[in-house]
Amino acid sequence: MDQEQFWKIRAEKYNKLNWVNEQSYIETFVSSTEFNKNESVLDVGTGTGVIAKRIALMVREVIGLDISQDMLEHSNWKDNKYFIKRDIREPFFHNNIFDKVTARMVFHHIIERTQNAMDECYRILKDGGKMILSEGVPPTPEVKEDYENIFKLKEERITFLEKDLIELMKNSGFKNVEIITHILKNFSVKNWLENSGLSQNNQDKIFEMHVTASEIFKRDYNMKIVNGDCLIDVKNLILVGEK
Image 1 (cartoon, one colour):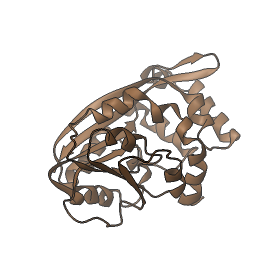
Image 2: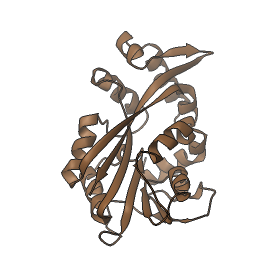
Image 3: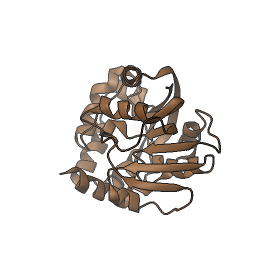
Image 4: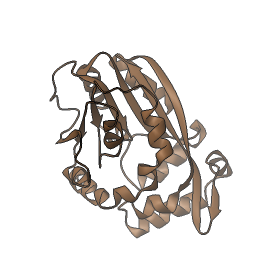
């Protein structure tokens, strides 16, 4: 399946994913650095514009960038922003024009030329500007292989650990990289699967992989089965780096 079709399917139910609109995650992300009314912000991989919409309340303007027109069209707000269908790896903006660049849950989808994408984020930032990056990671390195095996049935992606994300940012030139950990408690595996665009067969396989996982996996994810759902604690990292 090509990327356009992949995101067309995902876009249909994307806004029904609990994690997408989880307020504690959104607020932790936007409070990780200071935004002000004079700033211009680029939101990379904006998707349906959830982060861009929240940031728009605090800054002069937000531009949302995404490779999927279908995702962009599922945004239902118009104020204080522009949406552009574009790949961050394709140079488009002038040097040193944004005060902040944000990217929540997008870099794991950038399978090829990942470092180039981060380099581009660095290039378009003003001196002293900041990059705010967030990614989900395995709760411990011990369950990375299980994490990867689950996602093989869902999508092609990069599995990052904390050290990988730090290296990605520092290799582009970012300094003073700070890390905030956000734990999304009682993450519903059923909600995630039902709104994933996956076939029912793959949904069932992934759910079963959780239920029959090792005791280490269950412990590290604080897993519990409640009313036929599998609830886990998901670890998200938010990194803030300065140009």
